[in-house]
Image (cartoon, rainbow, N blue to C red):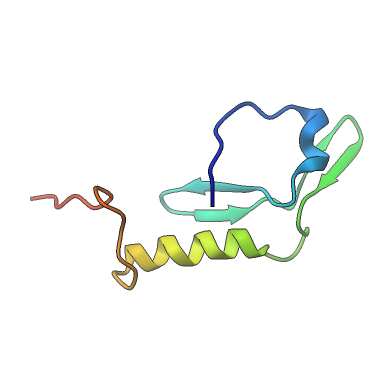
Length: 79
């Protein structure tokens, strides 16, 4: 999976299949859609988690719980 970092413009929203938000406590949470100027842009689903979001969630929580090996440099021992 390739990550692309950049600006997202309103006229591009219909091109997205899934969207999510990341955070320390939330891990990753799906974004069902975005409303702008009276138009609601729905991504994968308003009520279900999409397959990419699910995969990212499972991988990240697996790393957090030690069930999945973390990429080099992701884990730092705090003493």
